[in-house]
Image 1: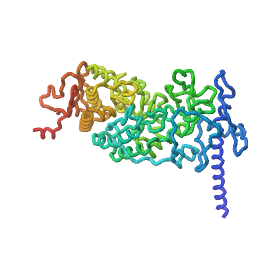
Image 2 (image 1 turned 60 degrees about the horizontal axis):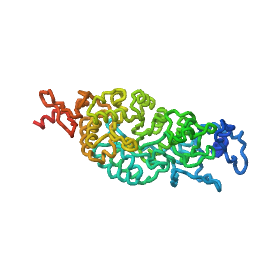
Image 3 (image 1 turned 45 degrees about the vertical axis):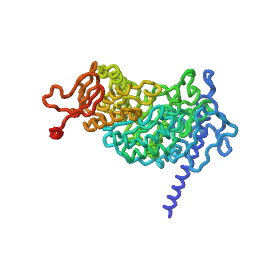
Image 4 (image 1 turned 60 degrees about the vertical axis):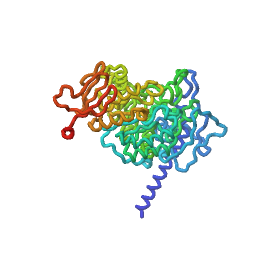
Length: 538
């Protein structure tokens, strides 16, 4: 009996401790906008805009002393656990008479189970941990990607998702096993690259129908995630700027302290010096939206929770990380290791070998990256009919020095969109794919090219790649690369030539060893004749 009383007492003590922790979290959440800016800033510095607080912190009508709150809240204010969330609790109501004008188009928020999970204390988040989606990609090196959108199509999501759903059987039958989706969250721009409320997914039902179709076809779904910056939906009483974020909820402490705006406001920061800004940016500044402080443990926890939610709730399998120049590669590594996607690709927009290898190393080898060096050198080669450009091993193709981490491509939503830098004519694009789909690296086909006049060419090239067993790590040997001609062997099972000049792998052979598989104006691909093929030919 005594032992039972001890157990009962212990149980009640745990309940009381939990209630106290939840109360502290709730008070801290209310105090966040007011207490810590005052503790940090004290007074306005240098005559700048004052960082103010307009409300007293109260609980049940009683004033709460700041000094008592400081010890409990201070660790959280600089990166502790998320805000307290109690199921069924009433949300904080906007004060009567308070009005703001939001330049970001508002959408009705849909609160999900996993969204609520980001608001519970960190020690309870294991209760909300989603189940991992059970799908496997046996050999990512043998993958062939397609970017399932372009700049224009992103602005009409219902149509795009419907088009993807219809195209997926054809993509799968062509041997394409990874499809890249655009950023799904509500955004200040129609393309989705200025995300606001992460858990608010416009046209979610149409998106999930497309994902379900991909699953049924055995195609891996990759989602574009924008983690460098974020747009706020509320005007902050602290900064008097759009720095109060929702879903998940953050304030100016989530913004790096050296985050400069674009011209003509390039002398201003998103977070003022006398406010509770985050740490120094670990990457390049993006002036068009507040840059996120990835060094903050709370930010890290919220990012990981969202990535896991995208996998478990929405159904995505893989991630494409946008603008990874904006934050240290080590954070990409952290997020990948925690969320465990089947495949990851980072956009590091550069051609410099040292910078690219440094980023891959910083991601601890967890992520591939787009091969901009190959894209630009191949474009120059095809347009100038001079393939010596491809021999540049520093600013040229990444497949020279790290083919396993290279994702090769001809165009994407940027080059064919705002940059207005299309690879070339339809004939030149076919020549580009003759190189791209026969060489190492993980090839990514552009949406416009798949839907355009070269679809059958792409199909035949992917088929030749598969038949020859070419993968991201294949061995390649250049025969010649100069004016008018590029020729190479890949894995001793495939031969390719691109350019105006003539060449054949059978030249100089006493016995024909190669059979032409597919060709077009200015290019050709051969496969090695196997012994069983020779019998059939005879």
